[in-house]
Image (tube, one colour):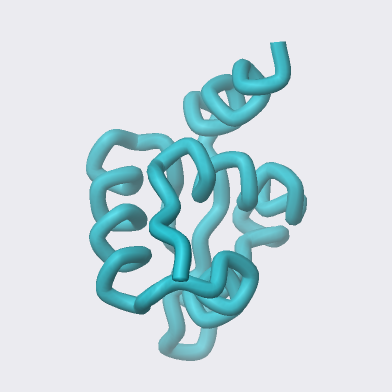
Length: 80
């Protein structure tokens, strides 16, 4: 089992296209995409939300996540 860092989560959200509230991805789908322990991902997601790199929206009682403009810049900077 791998242990992603913040950049891995940001680039995954970018690659999935979760860049606007209407394109947000559920925590469970993000968890399945990264194939990591739930507690590890929850800790990273919480940190990224607190740093304003990602935002959460509530859809039917479940949290969905997407990149903020700040998060998009960080995700895209990994390609240059």
